[in-house]
Image (cartoon, rainbow, N blue to C red; front, side, top):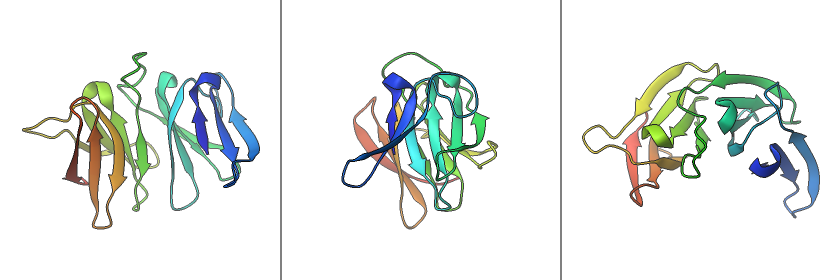
Length: 154
């Protein structure tokens, strides 16, 4: 599953790189996108898509059909350095980067904020990549300063 922001869709390929199908298209409705930039697969098979210009995370079923969505306050900027990434966590929550706000928020699957990571005394700088470790911590890539740091998951 690959985001195709230029065509406002998700493209699915086989492991050999063969095209399977395209999902979505331009718009604001269920299953439509406006600049999908991040994607992550949850353990239950749900795919979460960072639909940047629509300011939301869209949840898709394994067959690509629309499941749900939730708003992400702080998304929607048009800058090339303001593209969010997300990561489905093992406990079912989703870590969502907000580069322009120098924050990573932790949401439940219904879109309720369950915690934030800001770096506190040493603030995050444009968080992009997010990885969960086996011991339940987050490694966050900071594009604005060129470093990677580990944080406990709130």
